[in-house]
Length: 406
Picture (cartoon, rainbow, N blue to C red):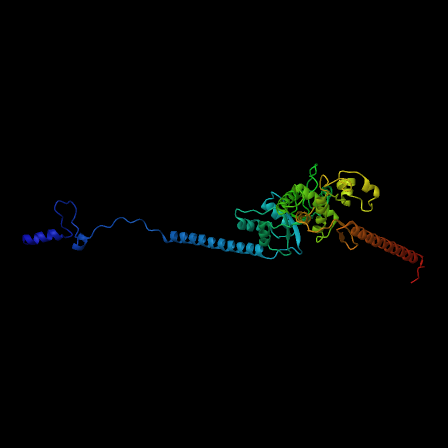
């Protein structure tokens, strides 16, 4: 064997040969293996059993999420249907939301009265609708079968039921106070001290349940102040009236003299003409106020001759000019009539028997109208007595007629 052969043997090695400098046997290595890099260490592989447990758990979680989502969608759909569907109320009714009442308290009251079927659904739906808003206090008219959404919309709008309080023109402050006390929809007491006569504007005032009597009184005072200020600004500059208060005094007399709107400017013109001439007003309503004050004359009591002659600060048959205060609360039209009266030469008027008055420029014409009125009044009284006698006779005849057997 040559040296080359020996070298080759040592290079490639054989099973029984030893590598130079090595104490162990020489392992033969192929060229491709000698050049291949070593692999990094690998983590131990997960067993098939472990992989199956993770998959099962993830599938369980996914199924649970889907199940909960389905339940949530179902609950939401049910709640939405109940919230927006027709309610159980059979007929329209009223419901009162008290000041300061909470949403849960309102919902419980609605369910208790049978207006809604589920207070919890109402509360949750209302919260989602209202946001930062609230349900307004007031008395509400709930329509039959109104949905919860309809009820929330109504209470959020604050469009509660409005009641009316009406003050007829020509009533005194004392009479208005009596009406306020008698109104069952109003609450609270009135002040002990009454406002001045003529300080209230007779109108119809709207209010919601829970409004106090003092609040309505304040509304009437403010309304009169505003109305008088505007009317005084539009007045005839030639009026013999120096202040707005004098306008109210004369307007109260006009209001008590006639209930007909078309006559008020002409009646006002008569009194303006008399004031301009220095004549006394000679108004019967001023006699009555001087005798009975704000309480008013009893309906069945006539005015006697002694009443006309009795001296009071209000008797315009005795005093000159205007009385010291109004004798009632005049309406807007009466004040407008005084501010811009009819331009006539009339100085007198008397009832004509038709609900109106006959006007005259002279005393002679007036006396003729008075005589006509007295004749007509006598005829009306005679006819009334005859009608009463006839009715009494018929009633007596009916009571004397024997009963017949059936």
